[in-house]
Every structure is written in C-alpha cells, then in structure tokens.
Image (tube, rainbow, N blue to C red):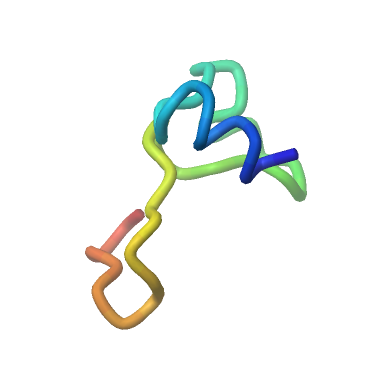
Length: 43
C-alpha cells in the first residue's frame, strides 16, 4: 500500500503518522525514497 500511496500521492504523508511513538510512526512527514545510503540524519 505504501508504493501505491507514493505513486498516486507522492512522498508526503499525513502529520498524524509523525512522532507518535508507535511502531509505525515516522520522524518526518516526507517519506525517504532514495535508499538508506543517502538518508539524512534524523529522517
């Protein structure tokens, strides 16, 4: 489903998923798509 979201809506996600402290929370509201080798600190 994440792939479908990125294709249809781009890398932005809802702020309700950011820093919630749950297993599926994300540090920012933008999904990092370029791979772990180029991932910036804190993302």
